Image: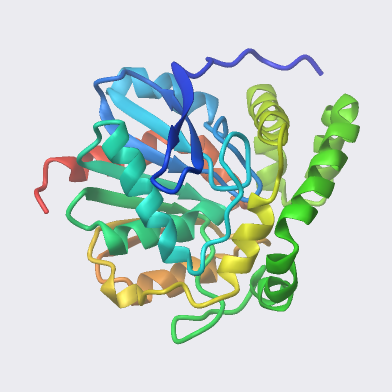
Length: 303
């Protein structure tokens, strides 16, 4: 299959955090646009930005900043004690990039991190979009279904060996690089029809392949860091997230079922839930206009 061309990031780089670690990021859209921070899925890296979103960012005046979590791409591997600790890194990133007020969107494994940042920095965040995001799996906010049982069982083991496991995963991805298109086909066969339609789009296929190969150049420990953190208490309660949250899920999602979105909606103080018929886990990658609308509608409402 011939893969469609993609708009390259306007800028890619790293910032140095106070403890000496590096955090990788990529920017799409106008440099003076309203900032939208994007947290990639698990797995994922800084170029996991849908082709539609890359083009729409210029049309709508949105500055997308896609942030790599520790242990993927150009971000230094690091183990947080709690999920909520990620917010301090994001605060440093925003200060370094002269971003004062911003919106957040997180796909799948990026969803919990958006809520952690919203809890820690409500005065700086206009709104949050959680797109097929995982809900807590332990503690008073826990929910079951989908990947929850796997996360609870594997979290204690992968946390201790995340860097070594990331190295093994990196080697596997590099070995399979010549067969990337066949690998996507094999993955798609096990997904619901909605996700198969998403992965049949040549530009989406190229985005996933390019992003995974770029993100695996050094390590892929972020996958295992994510699982370890999702299997612990997140360090905050959902009822204390005082930022508007837009929740978007597919009713055919087998990885993070819509029940996770319903559970989050029932516990977050200001949440709007949309469940889309026939969509799987990746449906939100084709909903950039809807996500930008939700963001810009909230932007001018002062906190």
